[in-house]
Image (cartoon, rainbow, N blue to C red; front, side, top):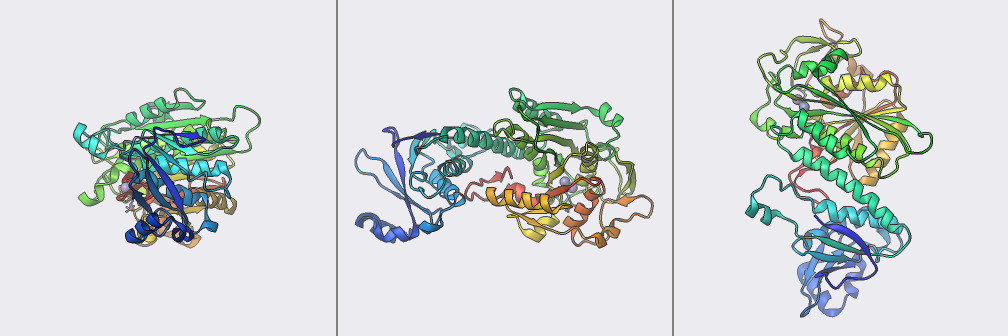
Length: 470
Ligand code: BES
Ligand code: MN
Ligand code: ZN
């Protein structure tokens, strides 16, 4: 995977360089290039590329579309950079003019967008391949020079690199098979990732989890060979009073078989991704020192797999959650909300200014929105607006869904305080959200249901096949 640097001119070592072309500029290209563009249907649309042969001993030139000249945004630059990186993935050293060409944008924002596009599109999960198959799938890019000048660009690049490193970690964890990424392995990865940075890590083992009465995590873990783990991470700004205290909660089901309410074989095929929320939270935590986040953040990550061992919880079993509520488990495949219940309670007890959870919680959210959107629910308009703004900036799309009070009665249980599934097959993402709401008290709370957006079956812009690192 390439390392990205800032350079004032195209280095001699570069074997390919891009030529950014807006939709309006195709007709103004030199005759030979214009003819090639015409022949190949290159119109300068954002993310279109056309590889042109270089002359003897000269760099290869790649036309890269950036869309209408007066509508350039960091998002479009990110997409264009991703397309360029894909077009030159078999080169070792290349250079890009995307930032130099975008003089109407803030240079720092442009550098960040281009670096993200270059690196994220070049991500591959090759750990489990043997040599020849790895070679075939490998990205050869070693160095990409972003041609740019200006103040603070190297600092911006360092910041972006820290963020991309974290996204890569999240993707790695999502891509790792459930049989090897046990709760213990997840904790080991978290220890390694936080070893040299100012993020404090605390792990609760089975005995502590029992003492802390995390009934939901224990209930789900009953069918497992691996003891549960409860991971907490904490970050505080190095200087000054934090502007706010935030809690992050991530669903860490390292594999979801459904439990005794067993999934189908097709339904199970992707269920190693069921810790994508936990991966996103861990990844977020490790970027906080690098971006000097001005807020104090505590992360709560419940970890277990959801299996069918001899003492697995039975449909109809009742457990008591950390906050004292009793829960009737009518479907053991609705397990995410059970482990999140305790984590949300723990978070709420500390009375932070906001709680945000992120979870591959339902298939329903994907039935509603498709794979390109995560569902967003919550109790606080201001917090929702902030998540929507973050979604806009990162192009990780979320859609605000309701939590209708009148649906709450669908969770009424005959023998306990609440049951873990609704009475109808409809609106499953909303019933899951309403279930979680039982555990957050009065703390402003937002819930991101990733569904299938945690994984992609296609290479598309900065997204590569497999874990998306959403
Ligand atoms: N992990 C799944 C949700 C899921 C399914 C995420 C597919 C991504 C892709 C979750 O634990 C689950 O099984 N949810 C059930 C809930 C149902 C039993 C009420 C679902 O959505 O089908
Ligand atoms: Mn499930
Ligand atoms: Zn699940």
